[in-house]
Length: 266
Image (cartoon, rainbow, N blue to C red; front, top):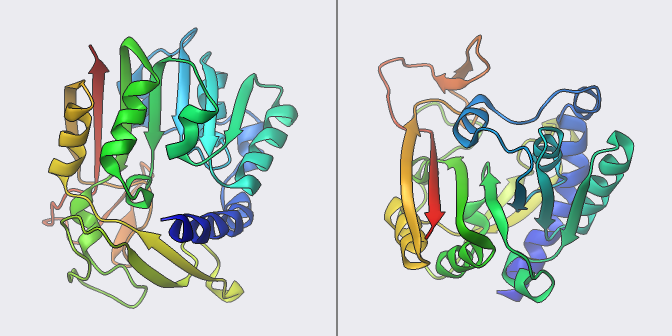
């Protein structure tokens, strides 16, 4: 697992520089939020609440919650990402704390509990052990605290999303396997002209894996929502609507692309 983690850490260090150009950092500094309408509506008012953001990348979402009044702590294992997050904290004057650590080692460096534990946007398939992850989520929640997750639908992860593919075809397993899936190619979200190569190790999880891990960790599911749109162009044959969401070109195709859930610690 250590070799996989270190390889992925190197990947995310490289991706930080790519995403720093791709994301609208200047717009964020000017007052824009990086949060989407689903999470803003579902999580609601966070003012005065303590919020722990797991797998925060370079912290735009974390700082967006801080701008809305939350007392935020962001966690990521990428040194480059956390370094950029800390620079953005200084440049925006927002109050935020960032920790550079592997999520599974977080209990070794943090001994607090939070009103909200939050994570979003393509995070689960980077985790080798979902049961351990769920226990960490529960460990850092106060009694009565809520865990919120918005994520790509696990069903979508079975399909080939190579740039040349023009229809749905399965490529990856839906059910969990102990050994990771190795993916090589152009770095996702990068400029193809830059020809940045990446090697990633990811793990597949089913919907039942996700829900059962949270239930086994002692959390009570409050709701589960599924959506037929996505915040990114996952497949070549998707179009972006006027509302900013990406959908299948075929309007009759209603395969779920995104889901959200909230669970409460009893």
